[in-house]
Amino acid sequence: MKTAESLNQLMEKRVVVLDGAMGTMIQTYHLEESDFRGERFQDHPTALKNNNEALNLVNPELIEEIHLAYLHAGADIIETNTFNGTRISLEDFGFEDYAYEINNAAAQIAKRAVERFGQPQRWVGGSLGPTSRMLSMSRDVSNPGARDVTFDEMMEAYYEQAKGLLEGGVDLLICETTFDTLNLKAALFAIMKLFDEGAREVPLIASLTITDASGRTLSGQTLEAAMISVAHAPLLAVGLNCALGAKELTPHVEELSRLSALPTVVYPNAGLPNAFGAYDQTPEEFVQEMEVFLKNGWVNMVGGCCGTTAEHTRLLSEAVKEYAPRALDTAVMAAV
Picture 1 (cartoon, rainbow, N blue to C red):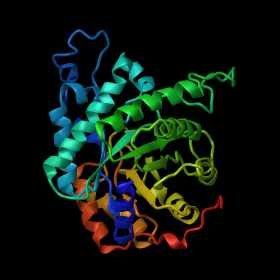
Picture 2 (cartoon, one colour):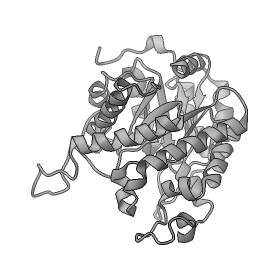
Picture 3 (cartoon, rainbow, N blue to C red):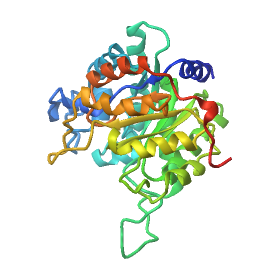
Picture 4 (cartoon, helix red, strand yellow):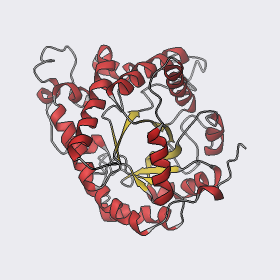
C-alpha cells in the first residue's frame, strides 16, 4: 500500500489535485461516428457515437493526449476513461463483452501518460461510475419491488471492471458519482472480493453525488446516512462530485468535512448546465467558487467534474498552493 502512504503524506502537506472531466475534453475533438468505430468496429450493429470507452480500444492516442494535458496542468491524479466501463452501462452500445478489455486498456493508457510525463508522485485512479441502474429503487411506479438488476449482477459487473483496472496497473480505485449507496456497496464488495482472492491491493476513494438542495442522494439517503453505510470499508478518502457546481455544494462540503475522519475530496461540475446541457462557468469562476472550500480548510483533495477542462485544472492547481489542507485530527466521524 505504498500509494496510500505517499498520498496520505502528501495530503498532510498540501491539497492534492485530481484531474477534470474526461467527457468534456473528448467533446472538444468533435468526434463523429467513424471515430468511435475505428477499423475494428466498422461493422458493429449499434451506433457507437459518444461511447467514450470505445476510444480506449480504437484511439488510445487521443485518450493519452487528454491525460497528458491534465498532468501538464498540474493534476496529481488522473482518472481512467472508464466511467461507463461496466458491462451494465456498456450494454447500451452492445459493448458488454469488451468490458474487461476496455478497463485493462484504459489503465495502461493512463499509466503510459504518467510515464511519458516523467515527474514523480503522479498516480492513476481507476474510475468506477455508478452504472445506469439503481439497486435501491424501482423505475416502475406500479411495482415498487421491481429492479432492473440484482445485487449479485451489479457486484459481478464491478468485479469485472475492477479486475481489468487492477491488472492494467491503476494505483488506486475511485468509486464516483454515487447516487445510490447500495450500488456503491456492491462495488466495494466486488473490490474486497478481488483483494481476498489475491489481487493487488490499492487505496480506495468513494465519492457521493448530492442531487439537489435537500442534501440527499438520488436514492434518498442523507450524507450522514450514506457515510455510515460505507464506514466499514477501508477507504483512503471520501468525497462529493458531479450533479452540482461548487457554489451549490458548499453546505454539503462543510457537512462532509464535519462528519468524516478521513481525508475529503471534492470535484464539482463547472456550475450548473445551461438550457442546452452545456457548462458555461469559466475556469476563473470555477476556481473562485472552489476557494471557499480551500479558505475554510474543508478539503484534502480537489478536482473538477462535468464541464471542466485542463484549464480549470491548471488554475485550480495554482490556487491550492495558497491554502493548507484540512486538518484530519479535528474531524469527528458521526458513525464512531
